[in-house]
Each structure stands twice: as structure tokens, then as C-alpha cells.
Length: 330
Image (cartoon, rainbow, N blue to C red):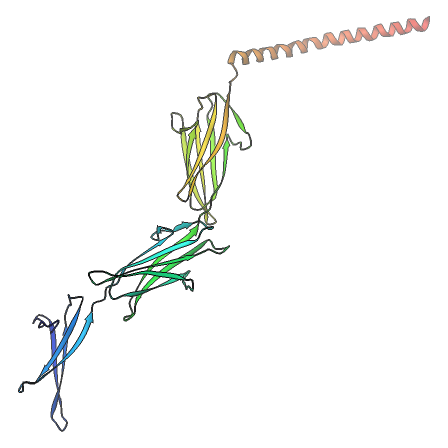
């Protein structure tokens, strides 16, 4: 019987009768029952009765169906389903929830796969109306100086049966990048002079970031977009950090202005990095032709004047010689 109800005939019941050939000529009876239980707890009764006498004996066994809890782990408020980035200067705060356990469970913590002796709070045991338990535990600790990566594990285990549930999370510290902006390959000029109607090449490189950052552009405060422009962004994973390089090419229309490289990350405020440009006029084609003509004419005149200068120089020398002879004769 289960909870005072007779077991249905569809259940798998087997009976084995073994004669005991001792002095009393008794029998040993073994009965097994295989059944799917639907009640979360109850009493299973086995009744033994004599076939000729009215006497009977009953043995009762209490049972409880265990239910493994659903496990949820958050690190600094973020789900541990993905790697969580944390600020190395701040305390790590982990919350483990075990929901829907039957019977009650205990929670234990591992940090980097090792049991921790850090203090943690099991601050909420709650038995619900449907007879299961919800448990929440919290853990707080600080990272060591050289610690940038780690794992946190929360384990639930029943006191009476060897069944465990595990939830696991990984964390690492985020790092802000070093950013450089260059205009036509020049990172040193405070204001870069560019030629009117020429294509300007601007590159923004964010080095040493963790996780990778996003790069966007503003030109004179307006989002970068327009005809004759292009954008290319690449991300590389280098020594556990990321380098993001973004390049834009455009033809400036304003006489002067600023180009802003905007660095965005999920774990830090946006940062803005500037470069400035100034248009200089392209030389006029007629002026350029006149300069070439004048230069050519000047070269021709120089060539023609060289013999004349030689003649003048010779005459000057001859005159000096005559004057010298005359002065000696005096």
C-alpha cells in the first residue's frame, strides 16, 4: 500500500517463496515492488498475512522524492553564463541561488577549484508552499595584486543522499586601452594641414584593452557618414588583451574641424580622442604654369648672360693691367 491506497495491479510486483527446511518447516517470502511514484512524499506499507489465520504484520517506510534545484550564479550582478569582467580595484560579489530543492540542501563555494575558507552568508532558507526549498548564498572577496583571471563554483548537496548540482562562472579584470589617433600617418601635429579635395586618412588604434572595445567616429560633432568615405575596423587578440584598429577615409568639406575617435566599452564610460585638421588651398594651375614659365625664362637668361659676364670680366682685367703699367712708368 502507498499512502493507504492499494498498489494497482499494473505495478511490477514479484513474490518469491523459499521453504525453510528447519525443524519448524517455515517459509521465507520475498516480495519486490517496482512502481513510479507521483506523490512527493508518503508512506509505503508492506503487509504480511497468514493464509489460514486472521493475523497480519505491517512494516512502514517513509519516502520523499528528492528534487535537484535549479542553480543560478551571478558575479557583480552579471550572469555567469558568459565571462564576467570586473574592476580589479573593487570587491567581487557573487550570489548563488538554489531554487526548488527537496529536501533542503547546503551550498559550498570553490574559488579557482579550491575550497574557500572565506566567510559567506547563507542568508535565505525558505520552504515554499509546494514543499521545496529555495536557498541564496553570497560570497565577497578582493583580488590579489597579480590576479587577473579566476573561477567561482557554487555546489549544492543534500544532507541525506549523495546528489550534487553545480554552477560555474569565470571572471577577469577589464583593462582600458591606450589610444592613438593619426591623420595621414602623423600623430605629432596638433593641427594637421590637409590639401583641399584630397582624401584624408585617419586611423585610431586602441591597444591593450580587455575586453575588446568598439570604435565609432565623429567629424565636427556629426556621426561619420557620407559620400566618398569608407570605414575599416580590425580586432586582434594579443597577450590576453585586444587591439582594435579603425581607419576612415573621407574628403573634408569644412575649412577646419576636429575628428573624434569614440571608444566604447560595456565596463567603462566612453572616452573621446581628438585630431584636428585645417584645409590649405591647392595651388592654382595658371599660377603654377606661370611659375614654371618664369623659372624656365630665368634659366635661359642665366645661360645667355654667362658669356657676356665672361667678356666683361676679361675687359675689366685688361683695363686693370694697363692702369698698372702706366703707374709704373710714371
